[in-house]
View 1 (cartoon, rainbow, N blue to C red):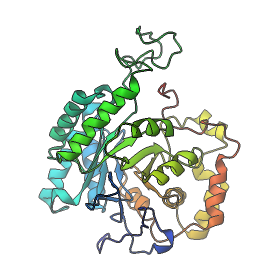
View 2 (view 1 turned 30 degrees about the vertical axis):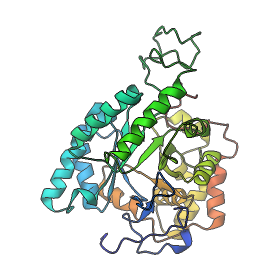
View 3 (view 1 turned 45 degrees about the vertical axis):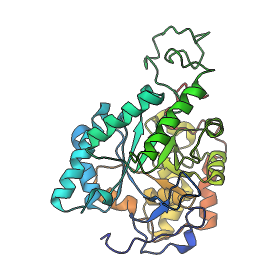
Length: 365
């Protein structure tokens, strides 16, 4: 089903050229992700990856193997996923896939993992990577991301108050930050983390380094001290209710590929939240109208909308049919009018109100 020559439809900046898309473009279609504009050793990442967030221990293995069988060639995981069990299961899956002949070599799969926020700082980040490599059973990853631009809370329980010399009031966003990671120190801590990532890249422990959940301010601050720029990718929440247009524009100007998560949903998408937003995206008139015209599912329309905004995607599902559906988005194109109509779903939604993931996250600096 997914066999054939890998096709690429990218322009000089590594952005998707929608006019060049044909039915030959399948989930192994790739784009350039580089940390150095002057580096001739281009790293190619599939446009469509398979997400593993919130998969159970058993599903992390069975669903990931099914995704590989279905043709996916990027697996997106993280140190913290599954209570620190998902990386290990993904590693077992890679071995299963090799033994079954689903893949021919480690190089056939683009592996992304993420440094967890508890491990900010140079030495701690290096330790985090070594643990990830050990769990995955590989010598290197294809992309290593800084999962969050700041440290982990000492308490995730909002009912608790954790004292800190860095926190002046209970409303201070750094109330739960670890000692030495206050408002005036976090930029330096983040720079040390990035320095560790740069060294890991130079040592061949990762083929590219990237960030996640970064704002323009985070990126601008990091740029001041970085010796490798730009980050290959910024993985962020982005969908019609929370498009993050300014951030995406900034990233594309800087040469940072945007990878959208929650393109189809989000863990904070409660019934009350959907009602406040005017209904689920799948049920919106512009999505349903495009679905009818193109004979594609609403999910495919939403994923295609992200692609045509030059955003790579990492949808997640345990259903083999849905896996194929989520990747079968390279043989059609939304019209300019349809793109605008779907984008207009964010009209009237307050700044940040369309956010469906981590809405209670305190880190904003």
